[in-house]
Amino acid sequence: MAAKRSGAQGKRSQRIGVSLQSVQEPRSETPLSLERIVATAVEMLDAQGVEGLTMRKLADRVGSGAMSLYWHVDNKEQVFDLALDSVLEYRGSPQTVESQDWRGEAVHMLEDWRASMLRHPWSAALLPRRALGQNILNRLELLGKTLSRAGVADADLNVAIWSLWNYVMGATITRASFDRSDDDRAAAQQRLEHLSERYPTIERTRLLLDNDWDGAFRKGLDFVLDGLSPRQ
Amino acid sequence: MAAKRSGAQGKRSQRIGVSLQSVQEPRSETPLSLERIVATAVEMLDAQGVEGLTMRKLADRVGSGAMSLYWHVDNKEQVFDLALDSVLEYRGSPQTVESQDWRGEAVHMLEDWRASMLRHPWSAALLPRRALGQNILNRLELLGKTLSRAGVADADLNVAIWSLWNYVMGATITRASFDRSDDDRAAAQQRLEHLSERYPTIERTRLLLDNDWDGAFRKGLDFVLDGLSPRQ
DNA sequence: ACCTGAACACCGTTCAAGT
DNA sequence: ACCTGAACACCGTTCAAGT
Image 1 (cartoon, rainbow over the protein chains, first blue to last red):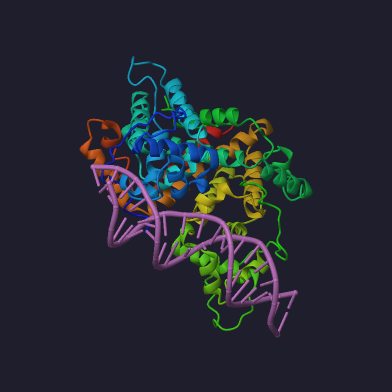
Image 2 (cartoon, rainbow over the protein chains, first blue to last red; image 1 turned 135 degrees about the vertical axis):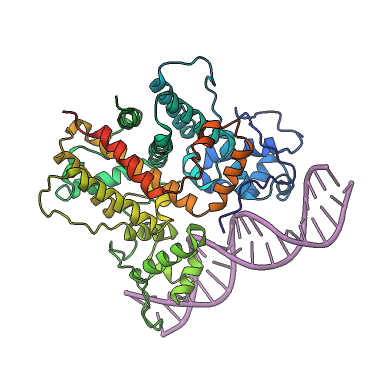
């Protein structure tokens, strides 16, 4: 039911790295193209979230009849896949020098990963549900290479990669969804205060009011990397 | 837009811990009740996933007219909230003895958390989008208490809790969605093999073919706990 | 207090047809 | 090769009404 979603390349789609700086061309008669569809989908997702993206509204926004999209694209799922991958491109020093600072490199890559997703808050929650696109594979490869150079044994490498993946995905998904509803935290905290005898610990540390997401991410990441570091 | 979803208790809903062992009563004239609605929703979610749950189909399954649900429930969102929370109850030794094995306790709690979510594969992806219900708060409180007893300073406690949360959520969401589409892994691996010169590292370690999810979770969790352990 | 059907304003997608 | 409108089979929810 939820299968079979990767590989199907549509009638004429080739994977593209759409550049996404809010395409504000003379909204005249640019011919419909996959690039424009994907770029517009990203704009709409940024503005309205996952629920707000509709094939009909997308067609409207792109200035075509509702059904024209389906010549360029198989279905709505593919629009999500392409929008996601277009947002995850890694523009980092690709190989450059063989730096000695593997830990700094890893931190940089993972913070960039998180930042890319937070720029498009719908992306984090979507990612695990979709096939792994080129850009994520690139990031995984780069991460693996860095950890390997740092001395992580091949036997531990998969666990190390997945641990960091899990941490980054969990942190980003959580942050992106809390972000969209500050009320929740207020409401939750209110409930907490009302029940401070039931939840004394997290009430005492004010777990749900802590606003320093970036700092917490960075500190937790350090903990994880401490755990992963090859013992000497 | 996505706000205002917590607290609203509907016209007559009180939080309930529905017991969910596949209610197979004489499908006759049990009166419609919130409990039955939530239990049936969980059944449908287990069978069909998030996309498969429809207010109309739910009403049908419960043997009532389509609109009868709305007397018991405000809207579809609330059905999700209640289904989620009902699935996350923690049945663990609540206080018992003041064990010395804090690490074993933490591992047990977090493995149980993951297992509860994997029993209902739709739950993990849903959790971060919803308000934090009673049962998650309970788990967070218990985790915080355990870490605190283990010697984690109050200043580090929030980061420690969030790090473990992030790891568990990331791992479970990833696992649950990979689970639902084995094709992806085959397809991805095929793409990988085709491009083994582009992704030599993750191809070499067979990252995408590693099937030992439980083992990887446990090992990665150990890494994280190593990082979190108070230094001596 | 509890349940209902008709109706409204939407969806994604198929299909046969236009240029 | 590219785009279209009409139509189908769905959605969640409002509302006025029934018992």
